[in-house]
Each structure stands twice: as structure tokens, then as C-alpha cells.
Image (tube, rainbow, N blue to C red; front, side):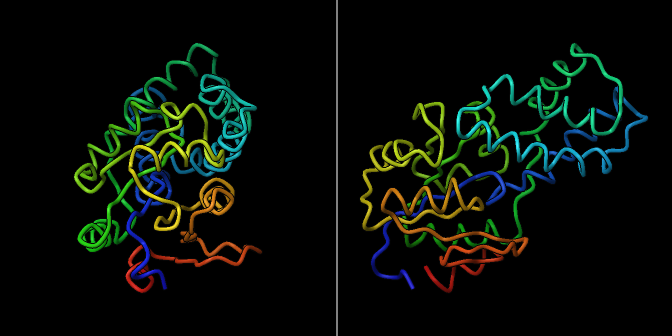
Length: 229
């Protein structure tokens, strides 16, 4: 579909290559086993995952700060579980979570295989809204560093996806052009619409097969990129 006219591929990181949900569960499991053995990790994560996603959407449009995001996603989760926990404990847990999270390195199925394949034909890059130090550790610890020529995060760009300036920054440091670039990510608003509105092609990674109204090339497994790139 895109063969012959794409030179640079930009990937989202969390929920696209790096399995955020699984690695997040492993981080919480360590915290709970060490300090809160009465909390069932699976039950907590079931509550936490959608709350975290909702908080990130607010963060993306600057309705939450970095610090408010880290606090609110935990506070709201424990409130939903009717579990009594102090603000001091929440702040400490937030620090522990950020420490443990990038120590885990689960990738989506087919991530390494597709990156091996694509890296022989294209220049690869990352655009992420995640926090700089944490994202660097994720990329390094999961063995992804050598695949990517550049990594753009929202802290260095000063804005978050879907703001056009983060895409502009990514193209600038990669020396890529709009007409020969493509964005691959799991978030319709931040990754797909953000890229399309900026003027570059996009592929929607949709492993959960969510219903969407936007007509855009869609894959359910990363390995399907071989068919279009």
C-alpha cells in the first residue's frame, strides 16, 4: 500500500510496541507484594487501566499536569475500590511505580520481528507523550534502542500529541519530510488524527478491534505491517 514512497516510519511507544498494560501490572504486583499484600493485583489493574487512560487524555490536552496525573490515577483507583490509603502513601506508590515500570520489558507480539523487517528498508523513529526519563528506560531496557534513529517525547517538544508541533519537531530532528513519512499508533486522536491533520500518513494499531468511524489503514497485529510497508 505504501511501498516505494515511504522512507521514515514514526511509532508510538506505549500500547503500540511496548506492552504498557502488562508491564504496568508487573510493576503494581511488585509494589503490592512488598507493601500491600491484601490488594489483588488483577482486581486493581482492572479498575486502574481505564482510569489511567482517562487521565492521560486529560493530560494530552493540558487539563492535568504531570504531577496531577500521577496522583489522580492512583487516588481515583483506590476510591473506586473503597480502599483507604493516605496521600503520603499514594505519592510514595507513584514514585515506586515509576521506578519499577520501566524495569519490565514486555513487548507486543511480533514487535521485534516487524522492527527487524522494517529497519532494513526504512528509517525508524518514535514519537511519545510519555515522560522523557521513563521512556528512555523503557526503550533501553526492552532492547529497542538500536532500531530507532530518533526519539521525540512531549517534554523535549514542549507539546503533546496530537499537537502539530510535536510532529514538526520529530520531522525536524529526523530530517524527514511529510510526503515520505508515516505514523503508527494505537490512539485514534493522538496518533492517527494528529498525524493526518499534520499532513502525514497514518496506520491505526487496533489489537482490541475497537469500532472506529475514521477510514484509515488498520492492523490488529504488528506483523501485518509487512503487507502494507
